[in-house]
Image (cartoon, rainbow, N blue to C red; front, side, top):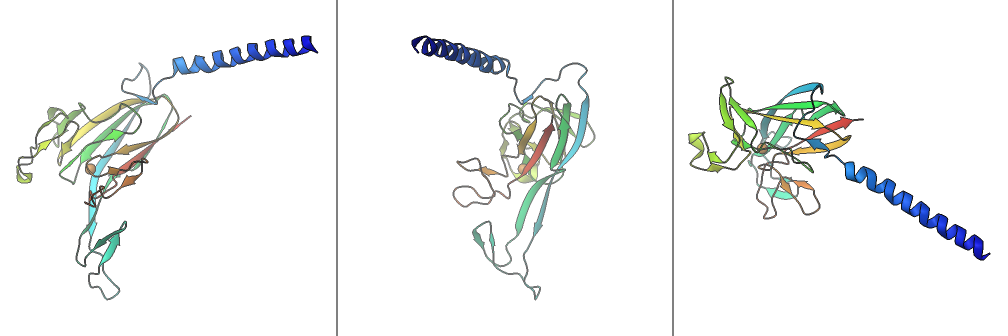
Length: 214
Ligand SMILES: [Cu+2]
């Protein structure tokens, strides 16, 4: 009985050690879900994406503007309901693809893009104007749209008429949220909201999804 217990004990310890070694191995080699550099010969998939906006004034059956609720926030009659969106909003790629998102700001003062849970975002990404002329990188700078005032853009923001390119390699299957932080408020549980915590509309959430297939 003692021998059996000892044997089982030794087996148990050995198996536990093997399991922890097996568990430690992939963790040590764990690559980021999306990485900013593509390996040579990775197939390139390019997507043209538009950052757009639409608005409406909700009306009743009689065609007259009505008061309404916008995601739990009371809005008076004749209030403009706005939303910002990416088009297409679903990008599907395969694991190993080198993905290029060419994002054009068609409407909206300024946007940025960050891909949640990764280091991928428009901060420092190359931007061009409508004619393809290089404008440098998406870094903090004065807003070139003079009619919007002297506001300074944050790093990663680009404006109407500009196009920014995001390049990354899709390493791990899964669905990643592509978020414009200008038009999305992220709640404490990661929920995306169209209003900030003071009830101020941010006209969002402005989100797209990148699905990486195995
Ligand atoms: Cu935006």
